[in-house]
Each structure stands twice: as structure tokens, then as C-alpha cells.
Amino acid sequence: MLTFVTVGTFQFDALVQTVLSSPVLRALRGRGYTDLVVQCGQSDFEFVEAVAGGDTVRLERDGVRVELWKSKASLAADFRRADLIIGHAGAGTILEVLRLGTPLIVVPNPTLLHNHQTELAAALAAHLKMSSVACVVHLFLTGLTPIHSPSDLAATVAAFDPVTLRTFPPFEGSRFRALLDAEMGF
Amino acid sequence: MGLLTIATILFLLYRLLCTLPSRRPVVKHEKTKSFAVFLGSGGHTGEALTLVSALDFSRYCPRTYIISQGDTFSEQKAAALEASKATAVVSSCPAQYTILTIPRARRVLQPLVTVPQTALISLLSCIYHITITHSPFRGRSSFADVLILNGPGTCCMLCIAVYINKFLGLAAPRVIYIESFARVEALSLSGKLLYPFVDRFIVQWQQLAEKAKRAEFHGLLV
Image (cartoon, rainbow over all chains, first blue to last red; front, side):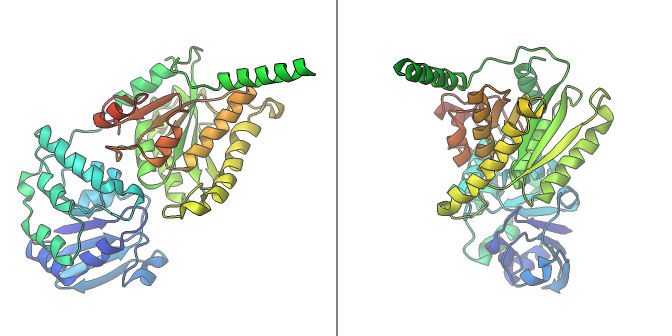
């Protein structure tokens, strides 16, 4: 099975460094996730120079086949083929993955302006709980604790239960269409 | 002399009054309307393109995608959306879409003290595209009928340029700001700055709409 890690458009050093640490890799291997693809963005980590020019780095560590690259215009194909996604708490990433119904572990990036990622993860956790769409709630909740040591993420990977996951309501385009059409006199 | 001064002041006040935002919808009935949308990179681009993907492109033509300098991903994503919509488009509108590039007002993690300098360069570019290129002297039609903004900071520069048009009595687009789905409890910095100035201000969380009087909530839009 394949794990896909995404840090978003910019960088998230701690997340990239952590997923490449032995405790997390061993936890992934233990759950049957033998392949790991990491979209690193501009994160600072051990292979930062090797991926800087747009190259893909492949290696094997702790029994996991790892593929590292910087970024792509669209991650849609990577999201679709992944069995587990570990990502920053970007709104776009969360919505896209929730609608696919793929297990998602969210790690808010605390370095962004006004730390809104933690806020979003908390609100979604509460919202999903209220509307009885019991999906990913426990994953979000674990994601609310910023990872201080690799063992936090390793523990989440070891403990989460993908069976309880359900999909999120699909994109409802008619709302914005109606709003703008009315505004423009159609 | 005194009369002239009073007349000038009254005229300037009148022009300022004309720039006030209004919730009055556009009444002109035309076959098509044009939109411009700012793609602020990353999640902003994702949300903005999701919003416009919901529109009937045969109604909205031509379309302008405004991107920040160096943001090739947003340009590719806009082109991909246009390609996916290509079958649904009517032939009455020859120039389907254009990509407009402007310098960023603030890069992610750029220290706030250096912002005035980069913001000014960005603003001049916005004024060039929105005010000068489409002025009656250049014989062009208006920039767009509606400008859709979703953040981040650079989109404020576009809004200022629209206000210059309004003040000068030039054609100006309606401005709609859609706060990111990522903003739950508090407005973003660009949201706070644009809140009093845009014609429509839309948020995607009920609790945020309760905090901001002008904000409208129509459910999750992305």
C-alpha cells in the first residue's frame, strides 16, 4: 500500500523530516504501507539539494520504498492512487482528500500567518462530529497536536482505524453559480 | 476663487460617494458578462478555480485569470480548467480567456516591514492593467464586469485599482470577495483590509458570518 505525504505549496520542514524518520517509517511498514511518496515543496531536509532542480530521489529505508520530489501543478493523480495521505492542514488538501474518502492524517503547519491551519483542523473536527459524518474525526484530533517528536506521528500511524472513515459531501457548484448569475443579472 | 474651491471639493466628494460599495446588482442585460479572477497560488488558486468551475462559461466571456509573477502552476491550472470546459463554450466570443501576470504584494513569510515597497510595485502594475489599458483613451472596453477575489494580499492591489477607476468615473467591475474556507473564526488579513470596500463579502463558515455584519454566508462554496 502507498502513503502520500504533501506539505502544500511552500514548506513544512518538520513534517518532511519526521516522515523520513525511522519511527514513522517503521510504523508505516507495520501497517502494510510499503511505499511512500513525499511532495516536499521548499522544505529544508536531508535531500533538499537533490530535489531542488525538480529531480525525483528514490531510496529504501526501514523496509519502505521512498520517492521524494518537490512539487507538481496538480496532485490529483497522487491523491487518487494513495491508500493513506499525510498532509498539512491546507483547506484545499483537506477538501480534496475528504471527498476521495481516503484516510487522512492532518498535521497543521504552525509557521504560517496567524496559524489558521490549526483553527481549520479544529473546526472541521467539531463540524464533522456535529453533522454525524463521523469520518476522520479522530485523525483530525490527533493532528491538532503539533508534532514535537517523530513518535507522535508514529503513534498516530500505528493507531488510526481506516474502517471508520466516510466520505465528505461532494462539491456543490450551484451555490456560487446562482450567486454570481443573480449578481450579473442572468 | 472661493467658489471654485468649493465646487472642486463638492465634486471630489461626489466622486468619493460614487465609489461606495453597493449591494445593488447589475441591471444591464447583455448576452455575456466578463469575469476576472485572481489566482493567489496554492490553496487560493484551488478555491478560486473551484468557484469559477461552477460557472456557465457560455455566459461569462471573455475570462481573465490574474496570476502572480512566477506562479506557473496557477497558469497551468487555469489552462487545464479552460481545456476541460472547452466543449461547453459558444463561438460568439473569440478571445476566450487571457492570463494576466502581476508582481506579488507580499511573498509567503516575507517580513511585514518590506511590504510597502513590493506592494507599491504590485499596485502600479494593477493600475496599468485595470485603469490605463482600459481607459477610453486606449479605446478598450472595460476590464471586466466582475472581479472575483479570494486572497492573499496581492488581491488588495487589484481592489485599489478598481477604486481608482470608480473615482475617475471609468467603467469598474463589481468586486466580490470570497473568504477562504480555511478561515473559520477570524477573517484573513486581506479579508480584513477589503471588508469595507468590496461590493459583496462572502464567508464559508456560519460562525464567521455572525462576527462580521457585512459578510454573507451561503454554505460551503468550494
